[in-house]
Structures are given as structure tokens and as C-alpha cells.
Figure (tube, rainbow, N blue to C red):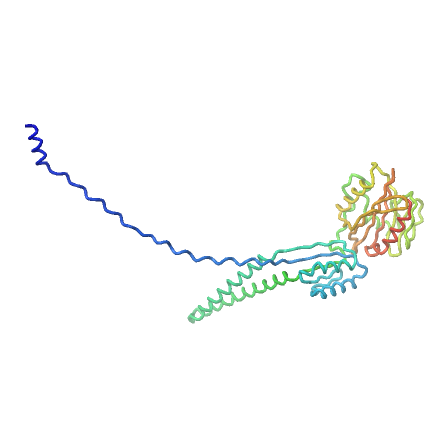
Length: 359
């Protein structure tokens, strides 16, 4: 009975609804976006440099030296660009700078020189790029001008004038940079441009070294004084010099005002020649003197050391020779000083006299 009841229920039961199938998603086909146009590669930076050289040379005759510098520059394919009482500036091809410096060196004694390089490539590349951009703008303005109405012609022409002025400015800058990059500037001076005198005293811990001063030597002789020149050595006076007649002092002067003196100092604290040479050199260079050269120096009975320096003295340059000898308890200081070219002319006579002296 129960079985028949279940069968009857199943027979008369409503079927459950079947859900509709899910919709198929649409197929989307993607197309890659067109690639942006490649930017033009930046223009290479030209390898352009400005070369400069500055030389200070001591000569006997500045007028003759100036003419020689100008002639040398012209022989190397250059020209002179400025001429002053104490200097001359020339322009030569970059490749000829070493030749020009060598020719100047032969005119006299080089007491100072410096060289410089300035990269101009980036400045030149920027100027050329800016000019090219202005040329494109100008071309577009000319196109607009051909289509402009009466009311806008004046405004367009004003913009064209402005762009042309900018182009001319960039063209001038490019020419200037190219000129600076092709022709080196060589400045030759016959005295130091900085006329500042060296410091009269130094920071040495040794009192006698702090009192070693070119201006003091020259001032003593110009005032007819022999200064601090007590000497116990047997000194030969250089040829062409007249000795001062002062007991226990060795001092002399030439007709062209080159001073010569010898003095004896206490070797205190006791030290050797190398120590005192280093101490004196350091003090003088720190004070502002230019060291020209140094080397061994011989007297009749001793070996010493020679320092040769140069420094401004008023409107001229002065040369200073300092010879040091150390003998036990004494330090012997030999000095000669005067206008640079005159002292140089008497250098051999001074060295010959020292070589005959017993210090």
C-alpha cells in the first residue's frame, strides 16, 4: 500500500525547472597601440677645447722681447691680439702651443708659467641645437605669414624679427666658440701681474729665518746701510762691486744697484745644512716668493746650498740669491739682490766670488 502511494506521488509530481545555460563571454581581440616615433638621437658633443698659456719671463730688453714674441707667433701661423707696456698676448693654433712656449723660454728666464684648458663642446652643441630650433620656428612663421590676413600680418612679422635676432645671437656665439676652440691664447708678461710684496715675516719658530726678507736687504742698501751683516769669514767681493768700508761687515754694491752681503749667525739650535735649507725654503715660499731654482753651492773651503728667488719690488721684479753654509757653531748667509735682469747679468761674477771665499 505504501509502495503504491509513493509511485503515485512520483507520477503526479511536477518536474523541477532546468536552469538556462550560462552565456558565452564574447571574444575580445586586442590590437597593440602603434609605437611612438623614435626621438632623434642627440647630436654628439664636439671635442672642442680652449687652450691658454700664461708665462712670466725675465728679459734684458722688453721692447726687443715683445717684437720677438710677435714674430714667433706669426711664424707659427698666428698673430698678436694685445700689446701692453709689460706684456704681449698672441693667438696661435692649438697644436703650436708647445712650440710657442719653447720660443718664449729662449728669450730669457721663465720665472712663472701656467696652462689652462676649458671644455667648449657642450656649449657649442647647445648653441647649435638652439640655432636649429630657431630655424624651424622661422620656417613655420613664414608659412603662417603666407596665409595671414591683414590684421595679423604685423604681429607675424614682429615674431619673425624676434626669431631672426635670436638666430643672429646664436650664430655669433657659435663663431666665438669655434674661434676660441681653434686658436690658443698665449699671454707673455715681463713682470709679475700681482704686485703684492711677499710677507716680511713668517711663521718659522727660528727668529733669524723670520727676519730673512728681500725688502729689508734692498732698503738697507738704498739707505746706505749695511744692516745686520756681521761676518767673520774671508770673503772675496764680486768683480764690478764696490765694498762698504765698515769693520767686521762684508757688504758691497754694483753701479746698477745690485746688493751683495755676507753675514754670520749662530747655529742655534745646532742643525745641519739640509735642516736649515728646508726651514728657509719653506718660510720664503709660504711668504709669497717664487723659487726659481736651487742647488749645490761651493766656497773655497765648504759646501753649501743656493736658493734663487724672485718677487715684485715696486713696479719692477727683484731677483734674490741666498747661499747657506753651516760650519759647526756658525751659519753663513750670502745674499745678492737687485732688479731681476741686472742681478741675473751679475750672477756668474757673484758665484765666482763665493767660490773663492773661505766661509
